[in-house]
Image 1: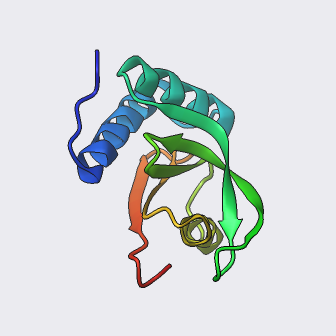
Image 2: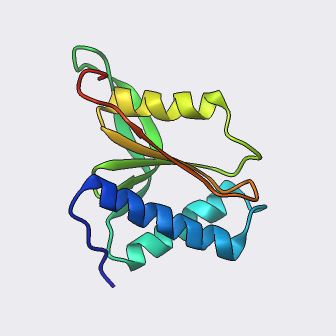
Image 3: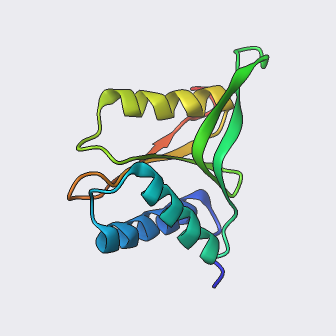
Length: 131
């Protein structure tokens, strides 16, 4: 099966739907790594290019490379996915993803929390003027 997508919104929908299927099957209560591995497995099974714990450069304002961080998932070279298995989402998790987007100059990210009884998925965007 090959996942078909024409734009970033469709790609986000595929990830969201796949996350929901994982959460429906495994429920909450596992470590983050279990959900990460499940999402990688299922997205790759759909034909998507998914890089796990992928290093991305942290860039300064002038483009100087300051170091790197590791995205939980980097999908199709366009989408950063930050995964959590926490009771709830806190401001630090949102700030973490927004920092990743800004410093790596990637426009779109998803924050997904498998740790509560209700799956949490939220999309965040960095527009060129934000970067």
